[in-house]
Length: 97
Image (cartoon, rainbow, N blue to C red; front, top):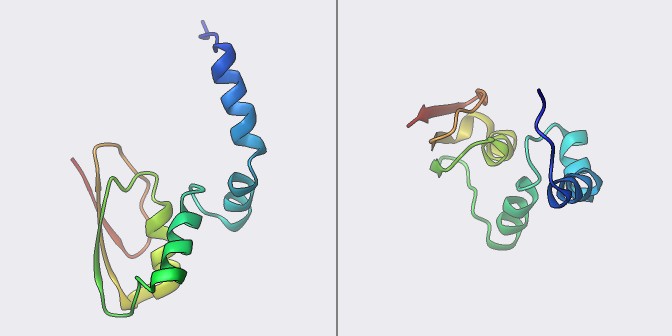
């Protein structure tokens, strides 16, 4: 038996699926639209530099880890943790709490 969605849930899903950044993230292979927030911060403040070590707290779904790994590759050490499970991201050590 399937659970019915409320009108507000249906509206949110429709808006989410119609969102430009959600579509762009899917097209570029990112797990979430939040990657563009990190990209904006990185471009403005130059946060990510080769040789750094990062801890991503609350890392699921992994979009930020993907962005960091794509930008710096093997020139970064990423440790990610979350209470939610997350599919592996290359170059990221993930801890499920």
